[in-house]
Image (cartoon, rainbow, N blue to C red; front, side):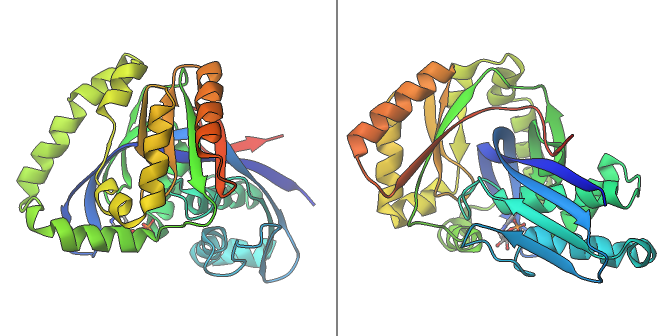
Length: 314
Ligand code: C5P
């Protein structure tokens, strides 16, 4: 029986601005999302049963409905019941490399890979936009994870405008093993603390979105200007996560002092990253930060910015 193998890259946020509330309970955002080559690997094949069977060696990865990979398979079953009746259930093996609950869209990218994998396995022939609109049903980051690369994301994060590739840059990522941040908590806390500053009307929000589209950070990305990109990076969620999680604030400070182009928290954290202009610079930043912190609770990774989303490997 044929097995499809997929690579599912993580993402970082080069920019995250919260514009306001939405009637669906989510937030209206403007983000610039960027894929990095720190990836999970998934294998998907038909199992001849009526069930989805998910396996993963990582002890903290849920193997049921809680997992977005499982939810993605379920969505495909619900969306294409006749094809499911023909092909049957799927076995999904997840080889986890992206840290979980880290602000790197690790769960979303696994879900995206399952959609792409089942599209191939069941020979559905769904196009990229069709897969992305299915993906948007159960995760704001999933449509981006399918296509990957560099993109402006608006709405809940599911409306995408691709930007040119930025694969000349590297990142050092750092995360405390013992800290994970709940994304709903981060957004709810932001709403409590900053809700009074939310932009009221759609027109005002749209004009802010246009400002970002034609703004300096997008120009810097078009020119692949690493130092300028680093200088203009921003994440509103830092305002609630850093004061609440002192070790994350400390880690961000130490990483920033270790060199590189600029440092920022990704998504709702707690992962922080430093943008670097080369692999050698990234290794130096990691070594300095590791020596200065000397904390066994910390994990470090080095990754390259990449222009690809979910990739099917031979
Ligand atoms: O879409 P996703 O499941 O990744 O979002 C996780 C949580 O983050 C949501 O339940 C919501 O609390 C918050 N969120 C938000 N506005 C967004 C995206 C996420 O409030 N645009």
